[in-house]
Length: 148
Length: 148
Image 1 (spheres, each protein chain N blue to C red):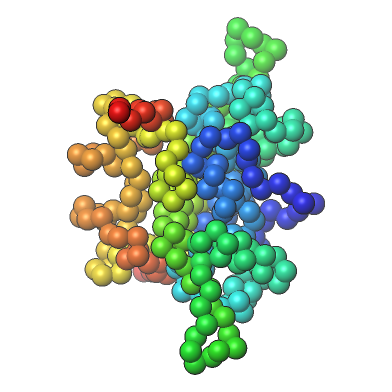
Image 2 (cartoon, each protein chain N blue to C red; image 1 turned 180 degrees about the vertical axis):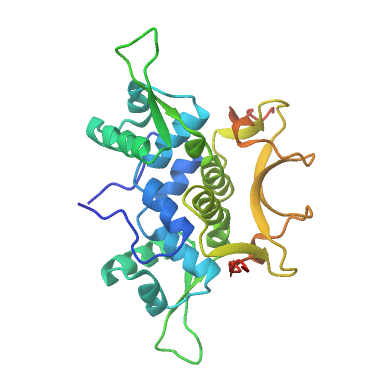
């Protein structure tokens, strides 16, 4: 079996990828976030992936707390996979990938909007005082240890 | 060989993942973006991955135009892998994964800063008129076809 962990990587991005880095996982989340899909059959139809892989990915997402299983009262023979807040919070990752694809591979079929107002939404860097640094200006710095 | 494309997915995120979705690729980009690594030996040491996999990933990044090979004048026996603008523009993907990891898996070792001012930088949703919609309010809408 292919490894999916990144041992020795003290890095939040690496740990996030241990959960969502496997093939198909982010597209399952995309379908759940932006298409409202909750049923196995919806994901199968959208993604066209082997059922054993889809089952394993959904199981992984539930185990990691990104999705939860619900059984609708009206259809007790069905299970649904609903995003948790933890799963929903990955929305910026999908949007970041989409924006990059739009910019560098050609515009895709969707834009992102504020549901309340319809205004176009983008994802960008910002500082607490409201500036928007260029991508090249954003650097990583070791977190200052808390003073005790 | 494991497939890496997502045929039938008319989606910029899926197309982006065809390029950066393979295991290790985003961590190589992280090292290039935030640690300034350019040499094969730096990536090997940082990631601890098999040399054939690293070679294949770097080759893929060069082929996709995310990195370019340079030979430093002083060391003509060395090659270096430098991010292109296309590669650098994936920074928000790494930051989005990091922010999610920090929030949901526990704080990691780094924060992001504006190199010019040292101000902490975050990645967030914003509208053209300066509002910051909640993650749940951001929806995907089919792009309006251009009127001719």
